[in-house]
Image (cartoon, rainbow, N blue to C red; front, side, top):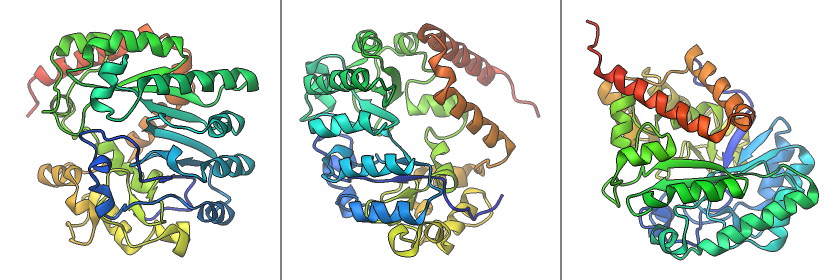
Length: 365
């Protein structure tokens, strides 16, 4: 497997590293992000234009990462320009959707923003505000309803809306209500585990959460025990498939890395050259198990790489990964629209019980 990549077709490009909320576990809220390589800033419109001008092969850009994209004052112009160039924009990492200008809400629909993941950890003001500090549940729901009105006005299916629900002990009781609200709002419901700190508001009734969500693991530790790998190990593939670019052009490689860059700058050096520096190629070799850790490579400090290195379990970039990527993209883009929600939850539960049974079987020697 090569450690170089061709002209990127998909990238991740931070639109804003600032956020208006103060979520307790988030390094953006504590200011840690702004003291590291990410620092504080907005993606500049002219840099965005030049990136599209110089890379006509770009097809898809993910705009969300550490901050709230809607704080960027130039966002509306970027939506329009990307639409004119045929570049699909998404915010699948997540937005809080608390404060959005009316013209930007309309722009999401008018310029066919593809997919918007909304982080909503509760189904009431009281529960939502426990973690989404400074957020207003009513504002988020009002903005979602406005988007739906605009979708009807423009007769557009875009943006597809996702309700991302991080499951905590303080909100697990509202999972059924949130699921029904998401259905009423025409949103895909996506429950997920707290992968920052398992000691913060831990899940109280794991079996009830599994039954309500279809999740096979309710904590990152449980995920590790079932899958024999870190919860976010799949993100390492971003160094090849959709590398993370900071708002100022620095190449971070993946969406987890905030502490260092790989030496290249997409705005200064050109996109293809910046994602093929000596440092990032060495980093890819490390993830494949072909090179030892090195101090100037951000991966060396990453908990995922440290676990890989300790266990000698390296990233799989072979046929298996390719098939999983194709099947997942097909499910996410097409098949999930056809499968009833109850069936999805049932399939997830079957998968979880199967994996648990597998773990109980004796290993072959």
